[in-house]
Image (tube, rainbow, N blue to C red; front, top):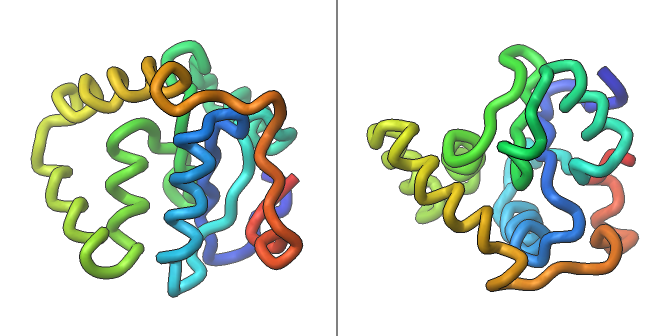
Length: 138
C-alpha cells in the first residue's frame, strides 16, 4: 500500500462532499493523538484501496477507514471506530456499536444518499491548508 505512515489509520472520504469535508475537519480538530491521515476516495490511494478490497463504490461512497493490520471498514462502523479515538465527548458515540450494523447503516445510508442535497457539493476536492497538508496523502 502507498505511503501510509506507521501507526496511522487512513480515513478515505468523498473529496467533493461538503458534509464529508466538514467531518474531516472535525476529526482533525479532535485527533489529539494524531492517529489519522486522510485522502479523498478520488485520490490514487483511494482508488488503489477500493480496487484491492473490491469495494463497490456505488454502495459505499462516503467514508472508508483503512487500518493496515485489519483492512477496510465502511459506513457507520468506520464512523464509530473513528469517533472512539477522538476524546470526550465524541468518543461516547462508540457505544452505538452495540446497535446491529444493518440498523446503523440504514441511518448512515439515508444521510449518505441525501448529503449532496442537504449539504451541497464542491466542483473539486477540498484542498487542505498548508498547516494541515501533512495529514493528507495524495
